[in-house]
Image (cartoon, rainbow, N blue to C red):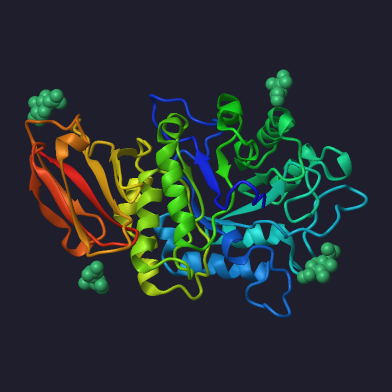
Length: 423
Ligand SMILES: *[C@@H]1O[C@H](CO)[C@@H](O)[C@H](O)[C@H]1NC(C)=O
Ligand SMILES: *[C@@H]1O[C@H](CO)[C@@H](O)[C@H](O)[C@H]1NC(C)=O
Ligand SMILES: *[C@@H]1O[C@H](CO)[C@@H](O)[C@H](O)[C@H]1NC(C)=O
Ligand SMILES: *[C@@H]1O[C@H](CO)[C@@H](O)[C@H](O)[C@H]1NC(C)=O
């Protein structure tokens, strides 16, 4: 999908709950970053079900994932959406009603039945459309044959009880996005079933500053900033650096995210922890794109890490700040303010150390706490907990004027700790 700009897709989520801030489209959805599963990165547009009976885009694939989400503990951990991506449709709209229809050989029971199946298990079902004449893989778009189907599609998705729609931006004129994407939002607000609305609006303009983020934020629950992520450390690293470079801009609109590729072939164990840690520090959607039927146990454990998920879903929803960047982005430190525990007003913090060096031994990184987080309360101490070692997480107690020293493995690894104010 629009691989011309980059290989990485990011969704900007705009809508976390806090009474102090105004977030994205206020339809009651996406108050915290949505969590779930999405087919694109892993299964793309594979429609040859003879050669790939278990991997092609059909109802069996989504039913299998719904089952795994429920039976393997993902739903309980917060992963609630299973999202269909491109290539689910027939090559034409219904000639009489102009409605979208699913490919009948691959979705013999239809999308409505799939949504019912998901809902019977407490899972939410997401779907995919495009604001242009065609989708990125050339299936019928919203403006198929240059006619506007915005309202009829919203109606169809509502009747099917779809819970989320990702609206892509291929085969469309980006100059009209301030009309077409806004109209889509209006259509969704008028139908009976509540539908989370993800836009690809800003991604299709070359220059961030050309985007009317105020309007985007008002219209969409989520938005996408860049191209698709692929199954590699390089792709993840590129996002991390982009997030660092645009940290100040993104922090204002709230941060990008995108498919978690953990559990595939491209990331090592340490690099998988790295992706999870960064995504959670940014408070962005946690959408896995992997095969949950064959995922390795240690990767599953990363995805189900309760401490990390709590960082992602923190009610303050503040995106982490880049505070140290050295050695051409190979050394990074990020900090994130968390909402106070209990009734006291002191905020816990999360601190991430990143070591991207690919040569030499694991290295000690050491920084004075107050130099990383000037607003720490100087009069109190903080307990330091390792969020990737839940069985034995306590590392020590530090005053703000003391050093936080951690041994960080090489080759794109992180250490992630939480500072808990000690009262
Ligand atoms: C449904 O998908 C199959 C490939 O799995 C394709 O051969 C067929 O033409 C599609 N049917 C329609 C109506 O688009
Ligand atoms: C939409 O954006 C274009 C520039 O790309 C501008 O000329 C036009 O006035 C905008 N329309 C609305 C309704 O905001
Ligand atoms: C620091 O913590 C102490 C003890 O809880 C509290 O009395 C004081 O108000 C805090 N100072 C600031 C600046 O928050
Ligand atoms: C933590 O303890 C559980 C149960 O005792 C064990 O299964 C798991 O492997 C341990 N995890 C680590 C990271 O040591």
